[in-house]
View 1 (tube, rainbow, N blue to C red):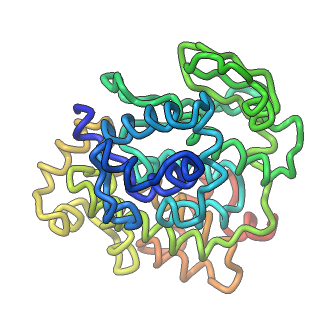
View 2: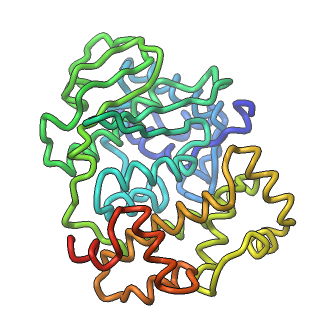
Amino acid sequence: MSDSVHTTIATWVMPILSALKPYRDGEDILREVGIDINVIEDANQRIPIDKMTQLWILAEDISGDDCIGLEVIKYVNPTSFHALTYANQASSSIRESLERMVKFSNVVSTAVNIDIEDHDDQVIVTMHPESNMLTISHHALDAFIGMMVMQGREAVHNNPDYIHWAKLKRPAPKDTHRHQVTYNCPITFSSDCYQVCLNRSMVDQVIPSGNSELVRINEQVLADYMSRFNKNDVVAGVYHALIELMPKGEPSREKVADMLGTTSRSLHRKLNEVDTSYKTILDDTRKSLALQYIRQTDISITTITYQLGFLDSSSFSRSFKRWTGQSPSDYRKSL
């Protein structure tokens, strides 16, 4: 996929212009890089990544700030990234938030993918810019990773043990103070990857203010958004179809394929091309929603069973025990 095919959510432009307001008029800046001023306040609009890269380069030139990405974070608001920020703020753990970023990172930008891996007492989060993305700005990644780090630190009340270390591909800035304040851990610049190593126990720590109902609503909004802006994202399409079909009964691959306007065989082939399967997506979707529903004590386990499209409670219980090691009722009591 070329630079011009990859896109970023249009509202990402707004905090950049806010950071540059002391230096130059926003309309002039957009005109210079070829971005339409009429789309930047609409989260349903997308900006080609090559134009965003030009904007970031110009932002550093105008401001003379080689850490402009970290400055831009100050101007980000909850609506900058559609429903993603609201869903993350309602999460019941940092892990839940990270897993959502893996699933919905394309909402912010299609040019970067995220992986999370557990290693003993650590969780390593890796950002993978697309392999042929030669021009993505390190300022964009500074801002994206910086926001993720700051949100996590806030969730654990700025515990100094939350982040073990960070690796950034970008060259070291003239002054590393802002990076040190943001990460509060050892940082390796000019690295061969973008990685952050987190404290696993804190990643899994329950956040009392989590609200599973708000998470569910916002994830449905995100799934709908992704299926609209990227018709070729077959995984997002399947996820969105499952959300619609599960409360109506067992969702077969044939039913999902029909909803997506394709055949079961074609859907199987397309999912295989992106190294996944219908069964995997169904299981992941059910697990994610089950862990949200189980926290809502006003929803009975029987209701959850049918909301997730299981035929009976025993089928749901077997799956839930496979996911968590506990039965639904025991898990709910442990909360």
